Length: 87
Picture 1 (cartoon, helix red, strand yellow):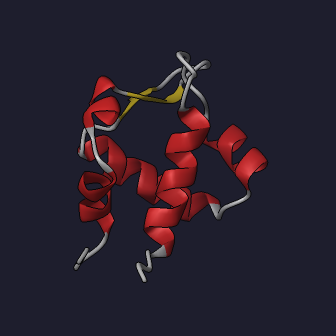
Picture 2 (spheres, one colour):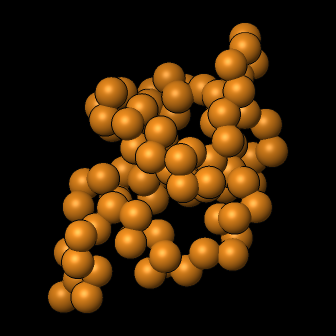
């Protein structure tokens, strides 16, 4: 049985929330709708941004959105970001 960390779990929630959205979505609006701890989700978003899965914008209408790299990834590629030992 595969067990994943809370980071992987919340990261998947974040990515699925941003799926099919072309505009930037603020982190606070994601937290309101998905209910994870704000600081934890901010840390996860930062990791995903460094990995090239998210891009961010700072402005009144800023936030996060997915990059094209997400469409080319497998679940294994994603889990390697957060999990020490995938298999």
